[in-house]
Structures are given as structure tokens and as C-alpha cells.
Image (cartoon, rainbow, N blue to C red; front, side, top):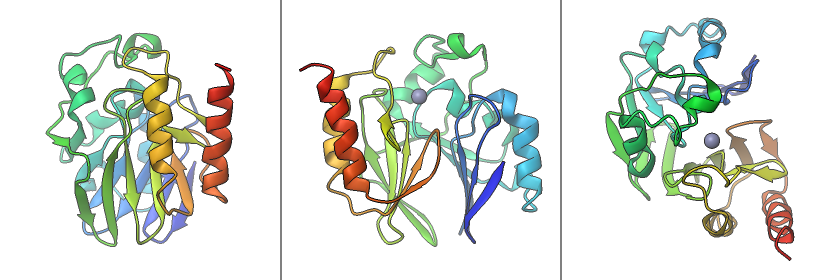
Length: 219
Ligand SMILES: [Zn+2]
């Protein structure tokens, strides 16, 4: 299902366990994550409904290196594919365990063209996305922050009322807590997570309640 968030920004919600896909139409046509391979026909149809072909996509930004976030990369042959190096190296090694490809029964891997750096700003006007390295769910998890439009694309670091699991290879609850504390300092109004609904509301309260439940497990 495709939902228009603004005239330049859409979210594709998968019909399976794959990730959300964000479609940004700016100076470039860019996607944030590409869901599971099993979503490919449905995603293609969703793009067609806004008159986009897979070949129109120029850039794919990955929030992290799990297979449910890169499964449809193969459709976008013209797109530059980017990921933080701490996860990209496992994708390049076709590491089924780190990428959860074994759990998701999807043994295909994209080739990553370039790595994302913490604090780098990606200009795809009207979007200006700052890369924020937020390890915890995986080593190379990142969020993309648009300060002017007050958007945070949070991948599996933060959801509405929850955060990503930390019990998989490369996960660390300690690091996730630190990453969530860093996100608390950002001024954003719309949370665009890797799974679940887009959330417009009190972002600090959401982070606080997620942190409380995390810490609660150990107290
Ligand atoms: Zn994940």
C-alpha cells in the first residue's frame, strides 16, 4: 500500500514482513530501504501508481544491512546503493547470519556502491538528509535527519512505542540506548520508521517511553 505523506514523499507499506520503503522525489528520485524480495511485484505496482519505473530510481539509501531492507535492490539497476560501512562489509561478504538472510529465506545480496558517513549531508532537494550513525540494532545502523522539514527516517533504531531488537549478531542494547539518547536531542516532528506506522506526535515522549521500557528490563 502506498501513502502520500507530502507531494514529494511517499511511504510504501509492505503486505508481508518486509520493511517500509520511503520514496523521495527531489533533485533525484531516491528510496530509503527496499523491503523484502517477496515485495517486488507489489512495490513495482506501487511505484507505477505514481508514474515511476524502477529505472527512474537513482539512489537507494539503506538504514542498515538486514535482508528485509535490501531485498528489492535488484530491481533498481540504475540506482547508486549506499550503506554504512559497518554493515556494508557483511553484505559484501554475503553473510547470511549478520544480514538475517537465513531467517528471511532470501539469499541475494546487492552490491553496495558507496558507504555512508556519519554527519554526511545528502542533498536531494527539497530534502537535505544528515546521516546519523545510530548503532545498536546493527553496527552500521543509521538514521536520516531532515532538519528543515523536521523528519527522521529511523530504520529499525526507533519505532512508535518500540525500538529494534538487539539480540541479533552485531546488536548491542548498550549502544542502542546511547543512540536513542542522541536522537532525543534532535528536533523532529515526524518519525518515519523502518516498520510500522509513520508517527506524528510527541517524539521526545516516545523516545522516553521506549528508553524506560528498555532500561526496565534490567532493573
Ligand atoms: Zn533490522
